Image (cartoon, rainbow, N blue to C red; front, top):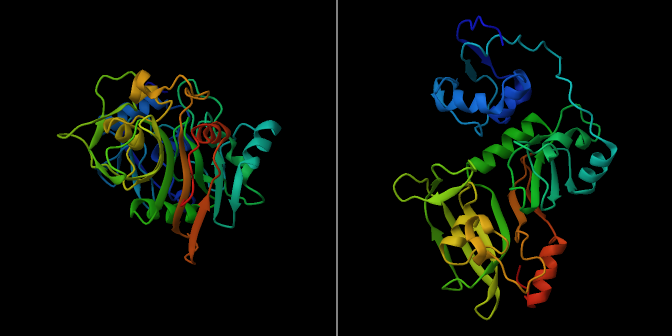
Length: 328
């Protein structure tokens, strides 16, 4: 960037950017700004929306004013109708992401994301769903948009908005907690009661090498609430759980399960070696699956309810333990 850092400027969010994550908004307008540099600007409050401090995951809405600190405002404004060229999606990636579609209408696409495929890029992650979204246009001019995310190793339902208007309405449903998400997990051990709530506040673990490592923090943590039910169990060795996250904190289900003494099978990040079972063939793979999602349809008509089948490694473990999935 130029040595002449220039004055502070602001830029208005356009109508076709509704619901876009702030970090994606910056990547669209200022591709020369690295992820690390943006994070520093956010931490120090140099980037603001309508005067308030914000985080990378916050979503922008049309008409909002984004404060651009000196050195960032040097990029020329995007001309009307001009789009930033994107790398072409390979035929292989296009076929793969299209094969994941389990629901499609004029507003929403639902994917059954496999374990191991990242939703967004990051350090060392070049292949991800966000980079393949152009293959999901299906004749639409607008590029589809992410409205939420799953961890790389979590499988299951991922909703994609087909337009800016759909992204705005889906984001509102998530924000206003009109969305019910059901996850299934195989855990090591059995919860102390057949059903209940885990109400433990979460915060980022200071000093962790992975910036998304979380911990229970009763003083500084944000409220995190999970409801659970034991669907089946194998004596005291393992259990199949239904999990309903009522809040959307990073790694919430993984931390909550570990904290009640039942780490999710394969989750060494939070369960250590206790999250492994030597006799289970797929024990090193995370057994957390976004099973079902129910929310008001963004068209304003009726309810959207989509369900994703279990991935092969999860199904093999369920069969090995003889777990019953009745009453789903």
